[in-house]
Image (cartoon, rainbow, N blue to C red; front, side, top):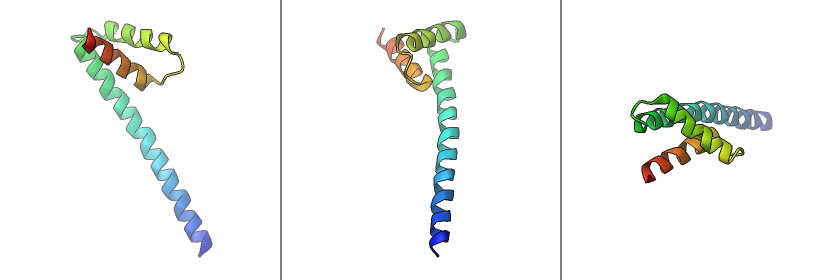
Length: 76
């Protein structure tokens, strides 16, 4: 009985981790598309803004850099 409970916990943790990773990738793509849209379709400009944010704070994730770029673009 104890092994069954442990197995269920492990499977649940694995499933949650797998789902989170795929969901995050999808979220990054959606945000990246929004950044390009805000740049009026100019992908090079969007990538420059993203690179700026990543160079400014190298330790942040790509998703956080996109969020920062979108914030700065909307603010200005």
